[in-house]
Length: 49
Image (cartoon, rainbow, N blue to C red; front, side, top):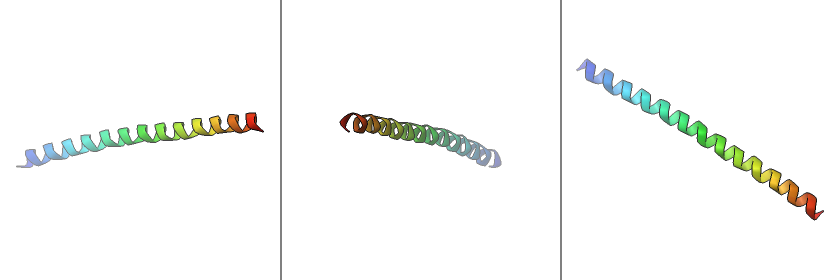
């Protein structure tokens, strides 16, 4: 029974690590998009001024 419990814990830990990596990638994409939009807005306002 303990080997089954250890296997479940290992799977859970691997899944958690994968989710953390995926979450970090999504955060990087979101902030990258926000920075890109800010740059585009700065260029737009500079041209229109």
